[in-house]
Image (cartoon, rainbow, N blue to C red; front, side, top):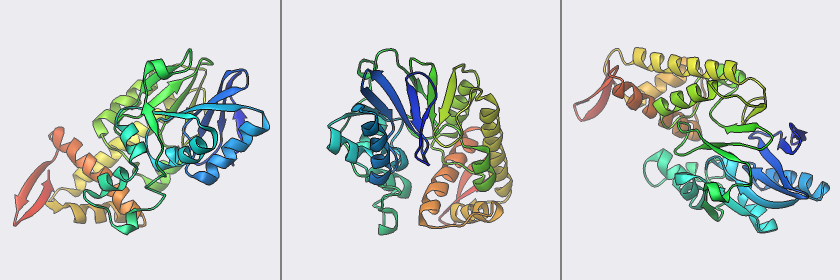
Length: 291
């Protein structure tokens, strides 16, 4: 863990719980794609840079989840590097309390105010084409979160962030965090058509052919949607449905998983409602879902 892997002439990644891209943009100068989950992870990344005499110019964030942005504060403070973030991800990276607030739907309790959901804030600038290193391409990858993006480097290596889960993760957890199910499926279909020298997902193995894993993620997403539809055969309130999800998928609920899986289930309900497969009804002062 945390070894530096070279995948092309100027493109590397640090193997970690959420992979960190390292790209040499000029002799002795690098930029990062994401920053690691916390100060400890960021220090390990910086050790690789120092060992090679590389100066850190900037960090390009794919999205604002804490496991991708948690190292920004340390690296920015230690090196003075710039940080760039796309769209609404910039707000969530700068005002990191927005994450648990969004998940909870109100002022978050103490059980959700910790580094797993709340990274140290950084001074992020808007991600624009003009802010990119020469030869880079931004790839929009919505669905997992508001304005998540990936990056294609001049070595034709594509970093695709969290738009794919590994097959092992899907088998273990069954349901992956999603903000917009329809947008996520569109992104996966887009990814299936991509060609590149190599693809680097944040939470799955780097590969030259991303199509098989993209197809597995599409199938897994449709299975979750079908299951939720089946569990709404009779009118059911959200809390009972969420308990059903945890029970049927053999998941262990804690405060964080309640927030993350709960938010995802709500996204599936919105998707299924939009598809005409479910409808919402108010009965006895309760919001219920039914086929």
